[in-house]
Structures are given as C-alpha cells and as structure tokens.
Length: 140
Image 1 (tube, rainbow, N blue to C red):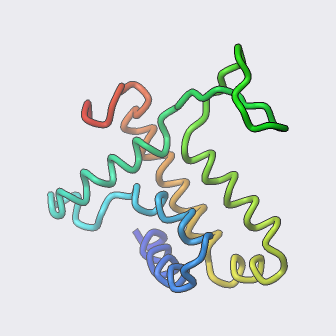
Image 2: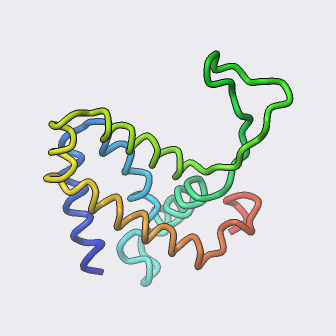
C-alpha cells in the first residue's frame, strides 16, 4: 500500500533523469499489479504486469561463452539464470563504475528504494503465483 505508493513517487522522480539506472529498474516496476486490480479495473495493465513478471523471474538457460573471445565454446556448460539477475548485475556494474555523481544520484534519487521495494514485491508475487511451474506466460 503506502510503501508501493512511495515507490511510485520515487520512480517518477528517477525517470526524470532519463538515464540507464531508471531504465534498469523500470521492468521491476512494471511487473507490479496496477492500482485497482482487486476491483477488476485496468485488466490490460494487469495482464501486462503478469507478462513482465513471467519474463523477469522464469529461468532461462544459456551457453557459457569464452570470456576472452566472447564466442560460444563448443560443448560449453549451460547456466541457468533469469532476466532479473541480468538486470541486477547491470545495475550493480553501473553503480560501481559510474563514479561519485552516479552514486549520489542513486542515493538521493531513491533509485535503491524503488528497486528494493519492487524486487521484494515481485519475488513475493512470483512465488505466490508459483510462476516457475508454467511453461509460458499464456498458461496463467
């Protein structure tokens, strides 16, 4: 309720920056149910939020690439990951390598609060919907 409303306000402030960091946290925010879902309002947005949720948290397999050449190694191991993990990794890299200005924007702009709140809500929602048992988003 109140925490998600506060996160919505902070996301709108973060999006004014129009940089990489708000773009990285936007999918987590879009995976949240829209206001009025309990009253069956905004059904198209509710469906889109389920699609974002499914795409963020379902496991995907990918081949491990050679870190030097970037090419796939024949017979390489496959790793299981999800888009949420990739976005979190990119967010961490952007904060770590962005310098003091970026770190100040992250702390003062509320980006970490929005990210932590939407990540928590998304994980709880995906677990309650038992997201990993479905083979596609259309099976919901």
